[in-house]
Length: 183
Image 1 (tube, helix red, strand yellow):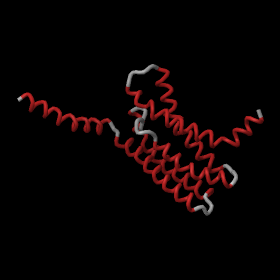
Image 2 (cartoon, rainbow, N blue to C red):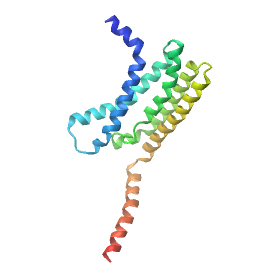
Image 3 (cartoon, one colour):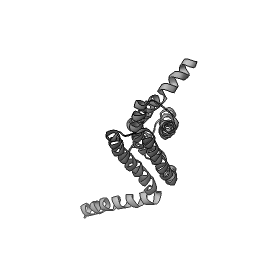
Image 4 (spheres, rainbow, N blue to C red):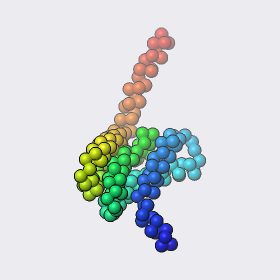
C-alpha cells in the first residue's frame, strides 16, 4: 500500500492531466449523442464526464499551487496550467448539459476569474527566469481565458427567450420563401 501511495504522490499531476485530457476527448466524441434518445448508462456516463471534467481541472490547479517538485517538473507544471484553462472552456458540443445549467453562468464567471488567478499564481511560483516557457504558457493562457470566457458568454446568452427569439428569426425567412413558392 505504501508503494501505491508513493507512486500516486510522484505521478499524481501527470495521471490527472491525462484523465482530464481523456474526459475532454470523450466529451468531444460523444456529447452530441445527448440530444438523441439513448439509454440510461450512456447518458449517465456522459453526465459524469461532464461533471468530472471541471472538477478534475480545478483539483489539478489547486494541487499545482500547493505542491513542491523539482525545478524541471515545476516548469512543466507551469506549462500545463494554461491547458487546464482550455479544458475548463469545455467542448463546443456541450457547453451545458441541461438548459438549467445556463442559469449558473455567474458561477462559471467567478470560476473563470479564480482559475485564471490560480494559473497566474502557478506561473509566479514555477516560472523562474525562463522567458521562453513563460511566453509560450502566456499565449496558451490567453487562449484558455478566451475559450473559458466564450463558454461563460454562451451560458449567459442561452436563455429560453433568447433561443426562441433566434428560432423566430431563423424561421421567418423560411416561412416567407414557402409563401412565395405557393403564390
